[in-house]
Image 1 (cartoon, one colour):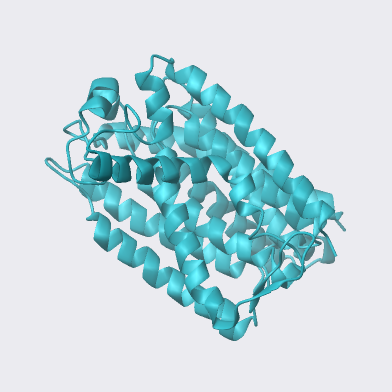
Image 2 (tube, rainbow, N blue to C red):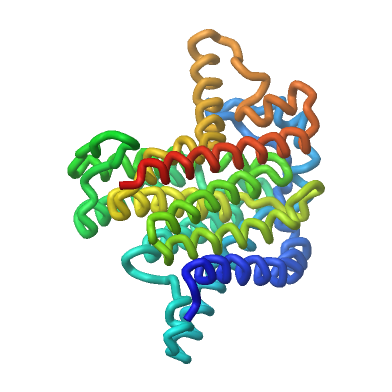
Length: 354
């Protein structure tokens, strides 16, 4: 039999090794089919041309392929299915204990990861066409909304989730209100995917976040969920190995959509179902995601109300670049902050255990 710690760390190791092994083949095809944007540039949330972004990143957008997120969710999917298959073929107690794909803990996060990956992959395919612009934002938001509606309903109707636990306080009873809460959280997390903007940035930040939830799940005795989160960390580290400057490829929508949708489900799984505070600590652990979304929202608000920009460019990490910070300095400081916030969130989650 494997210990609980081995059941968590082995999937992370497998996912990392699989991610490293699959990258050369993926890279070959991404470069062979020129899977990058053919024209540099992007638009802001209010529809205007992002001139400052173009000045900073015009060359990068057409330098390396998109769809590097395949390394992340691909390595996690292969690890998950491979362990499940081996446990099915050789049903020994030890191997069966390694199978972390279970209905009560990981079906929803894993399904969210794969659905987000597929939708994001389709968007990336449309983006890399000549003059391609991908799936329109309103349609992507609609897809996230519908998926979140279904999952939120499942949490409420099938799993009986009706409250949100608050650290050191009584639970907040929401009843069916957990459904719109899950929708709002999912939409905000998806919006935070724009943190994939500088070489190495998104991989390091997401790795810290999922590592924090792996520790929290482990502390809450949700070993299968902890193993899933750890596998995601392993996939992210494999991706990050090739994404540090100069990036061999970018995560893009197939990665960020998969990760952000899965993260919302994980936060809910580590809340009432575990007698924990997984939702309440999400703004702490994912503090940099919150800052990323808020900087975009504030930028639009400032321009519409005060007729001028609050930041040189939004989201905030590009603002620091516009001020003259080298990209590697922004990335390293974001990594430091994301690790510190992960520590704080884990500490808060464990101190408030019931």
